[in-house]
Amino acid sequence: MIAYWYENSGTPAEVITLGDMPKPEPGPGEVCVRIAMSAVNPTDCKRRKLGRELSKFPRIIPNNDGAGTIESIGDGVNTNRIGERVWLFGAQANRPFGTAAEFCVVPDAYACHLPDNQSFSSGSCLGVPAVTAHRALYADGDINGHTILISGGAGRVGRYAVQLAKASGATVISTAGSEEKCIHIRNLGADHVLNYYDDDLLARVLDITEGIGVDRMVDVAFGANIELAPKLIRPNGTLTSYSSDGMPRPQFPFLEFMYKNIGIQPFSIFGMPENAKIEAFSMISDLLNEGQISHLIGKEYAFSNMVDAHEVVENGKLFGVCLVNLSD
Image (cartoon, rainbow, N blue to C red):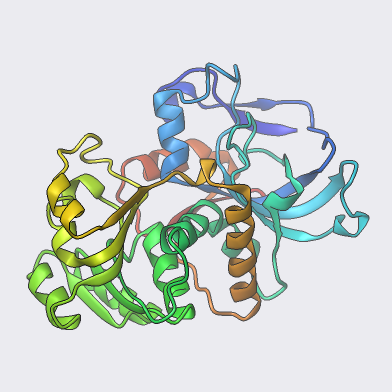
Protein backbone atom coordinates (compact mmCIF):
# COMPACT_ATOMS: atom_id res chain seq x y z
CA MET A 1 0.00 0.00 0.00
CA ILE A 2 0.99 3.65 -0.41
CA ALA A 3 1.62 5.39 2.90
CA TYR A 4 3.26 8.37 4.55
CA TRP A 5 5.50 7.78 7.55
CA TYR A 6 8.24 9.28 9.68
CA GLU A 7 11.12 7.69 11.57
CA ASN A 8 12.51 10.82 13.24
CA SER A 9 11.05 13.89 14.92
CA GLY A 10 11.03 17.18 13.05
CA THR A 11 9.15 19.41 10.65
CA PRO A 12 6.83 17.89 8.02
CA ALA A 13 9.23 18.60 5.15
CA GLU A 14 12.16 17.16 7.08
CA VAL A 15 10.72 13.84 8.20
CA ILE A 16 7.51 12.83 6.39
CA THR A 17 8.24 10.23 3.72
CA LEU A 18 6.01 8.70 1.03
CA GLY A 19 6.50 5.11 -0.03
CA ASP A 20 5.22 1.53 -0.23
CA MET A 21 4.49 -0.62 2.80
CA PRO A 22 2.86 -4.03 3.22
CA LYS A 23 -0.91 -3.87 3.58
CA PRO A 24 -1.80 -4.44 7.26
CA GLU A 25 -3.83 -7.48 8.27
CA PRO A 26 -6.40 -7.26 11.09
CA GLY A 27 -5.78 -9.35 14.18
CA PRO A 28 -8.41 -10.70 16.57
CA GLY A 29 -10.98 -8.01 17.38
CA GLU A 30 -9.67 -5.67 14.68
CA VAL A 31 -10.87 -4.35 11.33
CA CYS A 32 -8.95 -3.17 8.28
CA VAL A 33 -10.35 0.01 6.76
CA ARG A 34 -9.74 1.34 3.26
CA ILE A 35 -9.20 5.02 4.01
CA ALA A 36 -11.20 7.50 1.94
CA MET A 37 -10.36 10.60 3.98
CA SER A 38 -7.68 11.29 6.59
CA ALA A 39 -7.73 14.20 9.05
CA VAL A 40 -4.71 16.06 10.44
CA ASN A 41 -5.16 17.27 14.02
CA PRO A 42 -2.83 19.37 16.19
CA THR A 43 -2.11 16.27 18.29
CA ASP A 44 -0.77 14.53 15.16
CA CYS A 45 1.63 17.40 14.57
CA LYS A 46 2.77 17.45 18.21
CA ARG A 47 3.50 13.71 18.11
CA ARG A 48 5.65 14.11 15.02
CA LYS A 49 7.38 17.31 16.09
CA LEU A 50 8.26 15.98 19.56
CA GLY A 51 8.90 12.39 18.45
CA ARG A 52 6.28 10.98 20.79
CA GLU A 53 6.18 7.17 20.61
CA LEU A 54 9.26 6.87 18.40
CA SER A 55 10.95 5.10 21.30
CA LYS A 56 8.23 2.44 21.06
CA PHE A 57 7.75 2.34 17.29
CA PRO A 58 10.62 2.84 14.81
CA ARG A 59 8.26 3.91 12.02
CA ILE A 60 5.00 5.81 12.44
CA ILE A 61 2.22 6.45 9.95
CA PRO A 62 0.63 9.67 11.27
CA ASN A 63 -2.96 10.87 11.72
CA ASN A 64 -5.44 9.53 14.27
CA ASP A 65 -8.69 10.34 12.52
CA GLY A 66 -10.25 9.41 9.21
CA ALA A 67 -13.13 7.66 7.49
CA GLY A 68 -13.54 4.86 4.99
CA THR A 69 -14.94 1.40 4.41
CA ILE A 70 -14.21 -1.81 6.30
CA GLU A 71 -12.51 -4.18 3.86
CA SER A 72 -11.57 -7.12 6.10
CA ILE A 73 -11.98 -8.25 9.70
CA GLY A 74 -10.13 -10.29 12.31
CA ASP A 75 -11.40 -13.15 14.42
CA GLY A 76 -14.29 -12.29 16.69
CA VAL A 77 -15.64 -9.43 14.56
CA ASN A 78 -19.13 -9.66 13.09
CA THR A 79 -18.90 -10.51 9.37
CA ASN A 80 -21.71 -8.04 8.68
CA ARG A 81 -19.19 -5.24 9.23
CA ILE A 82 -17.42 -5.94 5.92
CA GLY A 83 -18.33 -3.11 3.54
CA GLU A 84 -19.58 -0.84 6.35
CA ARG A 85 -18.84 2.89 6.12
CA VAL A 86 -17.09 4.05 9.31
CA TRP A 87 -15.42 6.98 11.03
CA LEU A 88 -12.30 6.25 13.04
CA PHE A 89 -11.00 7.30 16.43
CA GLY A 90 -7.42 7.16 17.66
CA ALA A 91 -5.97 5.07 14.83
CA GLN A 92 -2.44 6.01 15.90
CA ALA A 93 -3.07 6.03 19.65
CA ASN A 94 -0.64 3.58 21.28
CA ARG A 95 -0.23 2.04 17.82
CA PRO A 96 2.30 2.76 15.06
CA PHE A 97 0.11 3.14 11.98
CA GLY A 98 -2.52 5.86 11.52
CA THR A 99 -4.75 6.96 8.64
CA ALA A 100 -2.15 8.59 6.34
CA ALA A 101 -2.20 5.45 4.19
CA GLU A 102 -4.47 3.51 1.87
CA PHE A 103 -5.36 1.06 4.64
CA CYS A 104 -5.48 1.22 8.42
CA VAL A 105 -6.15 -1.41 11.09
CA VAL A 106 -7.97 -0.39 14.28
CA PRO A 107 -9.84 -2.12 17.11
CA ASP A 108 -13.37 -3.02 16.09
CA ALA A 109 -14.90 -0.57 18.59
CA TYR A 110 -12.82 2.32 17.21
CA ALA A 111 -14.43 1.97 13.76
CA CYS A 112 -17.80 3.67 14.34
CA HIS A 113 -20.73 3.42 11.96
CA LEU A 114 -21.01 6.36 9.55
CA PRO A 115 -24.64 6.97 8.54
CA ASP A 116 -25.51 7.31 4.88
CA ASN A 117 -26.49 10.95 5.49
CA GLN A 118 -22.85 11.75 6.37
CA SER A 119 -19.97 12.00 3.89
CA PHE A 120 -16.50 10.57 4.47
CA SER A 121 -15.37 14.18 4.84
CA SER A 122 -17.82 14.73 7.69
CA GLY A 123 -16.91 11.46 9.34
CA SER A 124 -13.20 12.20 9.30
CA CYS A 125 -13.78 15.46 11.21
CA LEU A 126 -15.04 13.63 14.31
CA GLY A 127 -12.58 11.32 16.07
CA VAL A 128 -10.27 13.17 18.42
CA PRO A 129 -12.15 16.53 18.51
CA ALA A 130 -15.63 15.11 19.11
CA VAL A 131 -14.54 12.50 21.67
CA THR A 132 -12.49 15.15 23.49
CA ALA A 133 -15.58 17.36 23.61
CA HIS A 134 -17.67 14.53 25.05
CA ARG A 135 -15.12 13.73 27.76
CA ALA A 136 -14.74 17.39 28.70
CA LEU A 137 -18.49 17.68 29.18
CA TYR A 138 -19.27 14.34 30.81
CA ALA A 139 -16.18 13.50 32.88
CA ASP A 140 -18.08 14.59 36.00
CA GLY A 141 -21.54 13.26 35.12
CA ASP A 142 -24.76 14.40 33.48
CA ILE A 143 -25.05 18.02 32.33
CA ASN A 144 -28.78 18.29 31.68
CA GLY A 145 -30.00 21.57 33.18
CA HIS A 146 -26.46 22.77 33.94
CA THR A 147 -24.80 25.98 32.76
CA ILE A 148 -21.57 25.24 30.90
CA LEU A 149 -18.83 27.69 29.94
CA ILE A 150 -16.90 26.52 26.87
CA SER A 151 -13.75 28.48 26.09
CA GLY A 152 -12.74 28.57 22.44
CA GLY A 153 -16.13 27.45 21.17
CA ALA A 154 -15.16 27.91 17.52
CA GLY A 155 -12.19 25.56 17.76
CA ARG A 156 -12.06 21.94 16.62
CA VAL A 157 -13.08 20.65 20.05
CA GLY A 158 -15.12 23.65 21.16
CA ARG A 159 -17.63 23.56 18.31
CA TYR A 160 -18.46 19.92 19.06
CA ALA A 161 -18.67 20.71 22.78
CA VAL A 162 -21.25 23.44 22.07
CA GLN A 163 -23.36 21.07 19.98
CA LEU A 164 -23.16 18.13 22.39
CA ALA A 165 -23.95 20.34 25.38
CA LYS A 166 -27.02 21.82 23.71
CA ALA A 167 -28.20 18.37 22.66
CA SER A 168 -27.87 17.33 26.32
CA GLY A 169 -30.08 20.10 27.67
CA ALA A 170 -27.41 22.45 29.00
CA THR A 171 -27.30 26.23 28.87
CA VAL A 172 -24.15 27.12 26.94
CA ILE A 173 -21.95 30.17 27.38
CA SER A 174 -19.03 30.20 24.97
CA THR A 175 -16.10 32.46 24.09
CA ALA A 176 -14.16 33.31 20.95
CA GLY A 177 -11.63 35.88 19.82
CA SER A 178 -13.32 37.47 16.79
CA GLU A 179 -16.78 38.52 15.65
CA GLU A 180 -16.64 35.98 12.82
CA LYS A 181 -16.08 33.17 15.30
CA CYS A 182 -18.72 34.51 17.67
CA ILE A 183 -21.27 34.39 14.86
CA HIS A 184 -20.16 30.85 14.08
CA ILE A 185 -20.77 29.77 17.69
CA ARG A 186 -24.19 31.44 17.78
CA ASN A 187 -25.16 29.50 14.68
CA LEU A 188 -24.22 26.28 16.51
CA GLY A 189 -26.85 27.08 19.12
CA ALA A 190 -24.92 28.59 22.02
CA ASP A 191 -27.15 30.61 24.35
CA HIS A 192 -24.57 33.30 25.14
CA VAL A 193 -21.44 34.13 23.12
CA LEU A 194 -18.72 36.42 24.46
CA ASN A 195 -15.75 37.93 22.65
CA TYR A 196 -12.95 37.56 25.17
CA TYR A 197 -11.10 40.55 23.68
CA ASP A 198 -14.06 42.93 23.92
CA ASP A 199 -16.14 41.68 26.83
CA ASP A 200 -15.54 41.78 30.56
CA LEU A 201 -15.75 38.01 30.77
CA LEU A 202 -16.13 37.75 34.55
CA ALA A 203 -18.80 40.43 34.77
CA ARG A 204 -20.76 38.98 31.85
CA VAL A 205 -20.67 35.40 33.15
CA LEU A 206 -21.73 36.46 36.65
CA ASP A 207 -24.54 38.55 35.17
CA ILE A 208 -25.78 35.61 33.06
CA THR A 209 -25.63 33.24 36.05
CA GLU A 210 -27.11 35.76 38.53
CA GLY A 211 -23.87 35.95 40.46
CA ILE A 212 -23.51 32.21 41.04
CA GLY A 213 -21.03 31.17 38.34
CA VAL A 214 -21.18 28.25 35.91
CA ASP A 215 -21.61 24.61 36.88
CA ARG A 216 -18.84 23.45 34.59
CA MET A 217 -16.06 25.08 32.59
CA VAL A 218 -14.51 23.37 29.56
CA ASP A 219 -11.13 25.00 29.00
CA VAL A 220 -8.78 24.94 26.01
CA ALA A 221 -6.16 27.13 27.73
CA PHE A 222 -5.77 25.91 31.31
CA GLY A 223 -2.66 27.91 32.17
CA ALA A 224 -3.84 31.16 30.64
CA ASN A 225 -7.22 30.98 32.42
CA ILE A 226 -6.20 29.45 35.75
CA GLU A 227 -6.44 32.71 37.73
CA LEU A 228 -9.84 33.62 36.28
CA ALA A 229 -11.42 30.15 36.32
CA PRO A 230 -12.27 29.89 40.06
CA LYS A 231 -14.05 33.25 39.83
CA LEU A 232 -16.19 31.97 36.95
CA ILE A 233 -17.16 28.61 38.48
CA ARG A 234 -19.73 28.21 41.24
CA PRO A 235 -18.95 26.41 44.51
CA ASN A 236 -18.75 22.63 43.97
CA GLY A 237 -18.46 23.16 40.23
CA THR A 238 -15.97 21.52 37.87
CA LEU A 239 -13.15 22.61 35.59
CA THR A 240 -12.14 20.21 32.80
CA SER A 241 -9.26 20.94 30.46
CA TYR A 242 -7.65 19.21 27.51
CA SER A 243 -4.92 21.72 26.63
CA SER A 244 -2.48 24.21 28.12
CA ASP A 245 -0.11 24.75 25.20
CA GLY A 246 0.77 28.33 26.00
CA MET A 247 1.55 27.64 29.66
CA PRO A 248 2.13 23.92 30.28
CA ARG A 249 3.35 24.41 33.88
CA PRO A 250 1.26 27.24 35.33
CA GLN A 251 1.35 28.50 38.89
CA PHE A 252 -1.78 27.22 40.59
CA PRO A 253 -4.07 29.32 42.87
CA PHE A 254 -4.80 26.41 45.20
CA LEU A 255 -6.76 28.25 47.87
CA GLU A 256 -9.21 29.82 45.42
CA PHE A 257 -10.15 26.36 44.15
CA MET A 258 -10.08 24.70 47.58
CA TYR A 259 -12.41 27.12 49.36
CA LYS A 260 -15.00 26.76 46.59
CA ASN A 261 -14.57 22.96 46.39
CA ILE A 262 -14.03 23.16 42.64
CA GLY A 263 -13.07 19.88 41.03
CA ILE A 264 -10.30 19.97 38.43
CA GLN A 265 -9.90 17.35 35.73
CA PRO A 266 -7.21 17.69 33.09
CA PHE A 267 -7.35 14.70 30.78
CA SER A 268 -6.07 12.95 27.69
CA ILE A 269 -8.64 11.02 25.69
CA PHE A 270 -6.12 8.37 24.70
CA GLY A 271 -5.83 7.34 28.34
CA MET A 272 -9.49 7.65 29.29
CA PRO A 273 -11.41 4.51 30.36
CA GLU A 274 -12.64 2.31 27.52
CA ASN A 275 -16.24 2.49 28.73
CA ALA A 276 -16.07 6.30 28.52
CA LYS A 277 -14.85 6.06 24.93
CA ILE A 278 -17.71 3.71 24.04
CA GLU A 279 -20.21 6.11 25.64
CA ALA A 280 -18.76 8.94 23.55
CA PHE A 281 -18.90 6.89 20.33
CA SER A 282 -22.53 5.99 21.06
CA MET A 283 -23.74 9.54 21.70
CA ILE A 284 -21.87 10.99 18.74
CA SER A 285 -23.22 8.29 16.43
CA ASP A 286 -26.78 8.85 17.68
CA LEU A 287 -26.54 12.57 17.01
CA LEU A 288 -25.07 11.89 13.57
CA ASN A 289 -28.04 9.65 12.78
CA GLU A 290 -30.39 12.42 13.86
CA GLY A 291 -28.52 15.05 11.83
CA GLN A 292 -27.76 17.10 14.95
CA ILE A 293 -24.01 17.54 14.42
CA SER A 294 -22.46 19.90 11.88
CA HIS A 295 -18.80 20.04 10.87
CA LEU A 296 -16.41 22.75 9.75
CA ILE A 297 -13.85 21.79 7.12
CA GLY A 298 -11.08 24.36 6.92
CA LYS A 299 -9.18 22.94 3.96
CA GLU A 300 -8.97 19.72 1.96
CA TYR A 301 -5.77 18.49 0.32
CA ALA A 302 -5.01 15.80 -2.20
CA PHE A 303 -3.15 12.77 -0.84
CA SER A 304 -0.03 13.93 -2.65
CA ASN A 305 0.01 17.05 -0.45
CA MET A 306 0.15 15.43 3.01
CA VAL A 307 3.22 17.48 3.94
CA ASP A 308 1.34 20.70 3.15
CA ALA A 309 -1.58 19.53 5.30
CA HIS A 310 0.69 18.97 8.29
CA GLU A 311 2.34 22.34 7.78
CA VAL A 312 -0.93 24.28 7.71
CA VAL A 313 -2.17 22.61 10.91
CA GLU A 314 1.16 23.11 12.63
CA ASN A 315 1.16 26.87 11.97
CA GLY A 316 -2.13 27.13 13.88
CA LYS A 317 -3.92 29.52 11.52
CA LEU A 318 -6.51 27.19 9.97
CA PHE A 319 -10.15 27.70 11.00
CA GLY A 320 -11.73 24.25 10.81
CA VAL A 321 -10.51 20.70 10.25
CA CYS A 322 -7.77 19.86 7.76
CA LEU A 323 -8.58 16.86 5.55
CA VAL A 324 -6.57 14.79 3.10
CA ASN A 325 -8.50 13.03 0.32
CA LEU A 326 -7.43 9.49 -0.58
CA SER A 327 -10.45 8.66 -2.73
CA ASP A 328 -9.50 10.64 -5.85
